[in-house]
Image 1 (cartoon, helix red, strand yellow):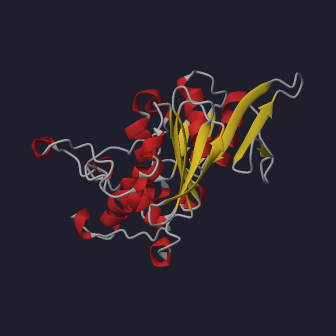
Image 2 (cartoon, helix red, strand yellow):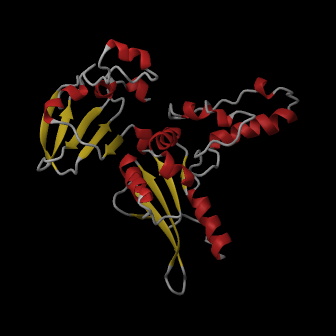
Image 3 (spheres, one colour):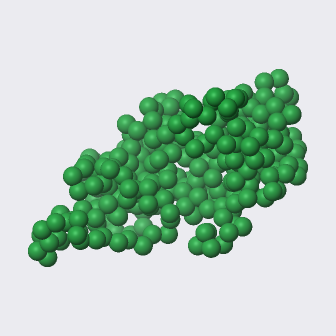
Length: 281
């Protein structure tokens, strides 16, 4: 089971990992959605409010992505639960599963989480007291690098965890990393990658008639350069090694050096909104 209170991650999962991931995402509502249901369904009648639409539920959140959750049709009064909006329940889930599945009542206090491959990935185990066999395995994964590693394991059927809680590190402001196993970026395109209008998929004016998204102008990476520190690691078929590319906020390529990488591309954003402190807050 996968759970997360981050709507941005849920949106990422739905758009990029739909077939392999969605069956494992918890259907439990997030704290924001639970409180909204209580206000509309329980509090409204007690206050004598006949039309729940006239009773407003306002939440103050540290992340703009919460607007994504609030706008989901599944979270309207007549709708159903939003898929994948659970989060922050790792301790409760682990304790409840231990007691109901294995008859083990865990003592109060912090659970014995262990840090594994890095400080942003932790796991907690429940073992059989006699044999030492692992009965229950839960994990907390922070940041896209750890999340993508888990996604690959799930797609390959090699994920050993019963429950995983997903969290973005500082809501993605410290690091967002996306990788693919495509054909990589050719050397002649290294600079064009982050310049405005250089990566548009339009070939002729006639292509404008078939647009169904706003992502046709070739401005994505250029805009991200203005907001964060952007680096790209890429490798094409036939290259002896990959290349790490570093870009300035203007989109200009400032450095490149050899870097181990299989064929494909990884784009990393660090210190998102560091150039716009007001938006970062």
